[in-house]
Length: 253
Image 1: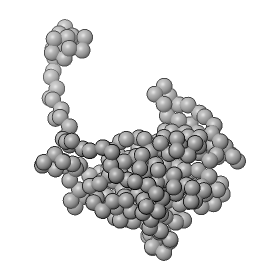
Image 2: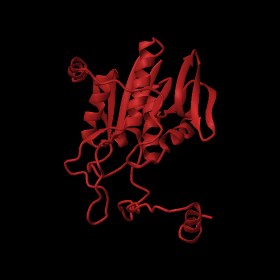
Image 3: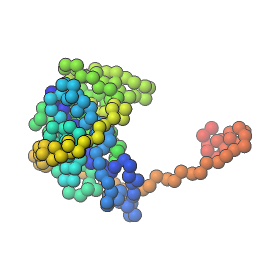
Image 4: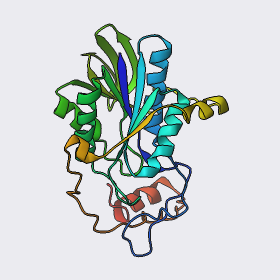
């Protein structure tokens, strides 16, 4: 079985994001970029399934700017067999919207015919949490979101999902779209020999036109701003004073 793993190039999670002075977006100048952490977890799970002999080939795919080659090389160094880069933007500040990404991934699925798509539940740059669900709708495949455990048995996958009320276990028929959550696994570090081998693994470049998809944005960013600064705490001397502040100042009771 072949597994497709979409990976996105985002600002590294350790970097403090800075907003441009004019509020037009996030400043990406000289900022460290890396693979979206949830996508990294999806890649790790795909590689583990391959190591168990369940999966025969892991294909990484990224959609965005040419610089996403670095992200795909990381995926190849982790253990992916080959990669596909769809160059859909020239400007690093251009973010391809989830519907366009889902349509492009549908095109890749039609060409590659994988038995499963493992993807991160969301990207940490825009937190949309929509691509996996949209891809499920476009393909008509079963989908399991927020996976914290995945077990594949023949033509079925048993997925434990993290939901508001706790954990939910479902069984889906393959092929399926599975979006992974934080607690599924801990991704491995790529070793130096594997990093060197990754340079020789195939990486194909495509364009949206190859799949007949228009990636023109449907949304426009009106303004970007920093979150409001957190107000300082206040010490109270008694329960009565606390209740008074909650009632009169905070207005929560």
